[in-house]
Image (cartoon, rainbow, N blue to C red):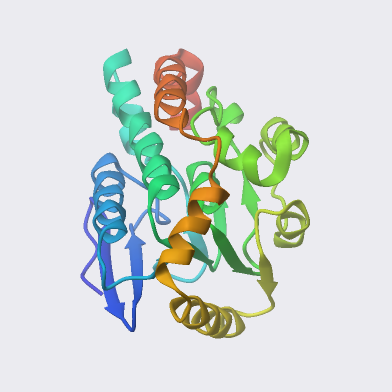
Length: 252
């Protein structure tokens, strides 16, 4: 793995038709805008790479899958344009995952917050372990999970999405996420998780890639309007992040 820096790291390894994409950031695998853009571009590239049939999306480390948006960058936002541009990074990533021609398997080895939950929801199949609890904490800092809501609601439904959003300080267990449909399977240990990811991805990579691509289109039917919708949602978050409530909450 390449050494971490303030903008995070991204590494892709392609082997036997499987592309393993690993992102990382020293601040609990959070996403500054530049890392969001790099991951978006990488998935767009892999979508058209004929040497790839399946993508595994994972993060570095053991305890946290993804802490969502970079708090440092959120604090630095000073205009509506800057705020909208920042949250558009998550909109672009989710849309890239949605429109990617390859099946994306999420390997979730730890906790996920905010945008990290949105990334999990945008995976086509998510495998996790018992430590992979989730939380939508946005309301607690004065904004809301506007950009990721369509992806999360698509997986777990409006009722569970509402429950997560309003209980902004409450962690939901991996078992809860499995029951609601965010996770496809939950393993007890990281070792069992890695084995399951390996076995499942190899099985998928052995299937007809054209059939996988056509099935992915069906999985995501009815979401073409997300290109516009998620950008509109980004502008809501971009406005709210300028509030005194949010600024004060971020520095506590």
